[in-house]
Length: 514
Image 1 (tube, rainbow, N blue to C red):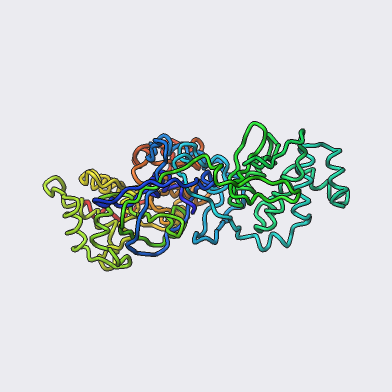
Image 2: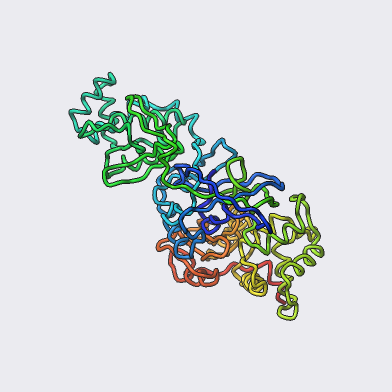
């Protein structure tokens, strides 16, 4: 299953191991072999479901802390900004109950911070299928295996090895020149079908000229002996897209052979012994538990399937108690706000003497449907991701109220609506304006939308997940702050962001504070 590292789910990686604690649950340990693609753990989807089932929790055998601090989270998010160059809008999907995942989140060689990688044992990355694959295969000018073989021979054995490989493959000289001159696997091959990518990887591994006749049959690692350059990155890219673990070593790219499915035509074999696993985990049974789920659009998703334990989409313990009371077995139910408020006060034990009425009005504005004053599970869990944690509840409500009171925060405004408002204002005044809003495609995140001096609309996502810092990673330099207000202040100092721009009038929440 692919678990999220990008955007909202970086700090929620521990949630993939968590389930409600059950009093008196019997504990037992079992050793299981780590699935070898643990390094490629990324974002997937939570299927619409509700159930009461046996829940297990995966725990590292070594005393590794599952929680990530803000520094580690920030490092991961900053790394995501340096993604591999792929066409804008390209998506990738997998057939094992996952759905579309942004390509850069899965295949970026630096996206997985080591501390995250160590904590996410027992997960595997699926074989990925690109949306352009059916068209890409038809346009491949050279056989995928031959292309990989030639590139590897040229990179490791020079001109003589290239000539020998070309003769063995019966390729025309002009074909050899066009392939070798690029020095890397073309994009059309990197996003081709699974079969074509397996042939490319087989060619890369078979065509690499080795300096010794060492027997790799006893090795758990298929090695591509190119130590630098774009070709080694391409080899790792293709291997990861096939669900394999690939990592850079001093003598080239290593590809895990634990699963025994490293492609080759040369007859070279790599072991896949169950005894060779080096990263066991312990499994602790925690009894039966309830879980709640719904499907989310876009990235930043959770996954429930045959290979993953039940996961709460609400990351906060208090929030889960509210979910259990209101939506158990009825995840699509629309709860009247009066009923929600009663449960909210009961579960949070909120002291009404410590807050003002405006706090509950602000909460209602975020979680209620504006047309019928009902609360859905999705809206409530999104609210927790945006403003959590919920303990102490007074600070949770303070954060929520403070954000809504900012004149630059417009809340539930879609990207298209924000662009329309800003473009209309610019057309009439020729002045630059901006607003901040919820990111509706990535729960837990926010977005700054502004119009620049040329009248172009720019969207800048603020990466944030439950109880973590706020980060603007797709700006130079990357910005990070513990609160959205502080990040806004930093953005106001950047020429390429909000400096010199005016706040767009019309904050829909201002009436709450009159």
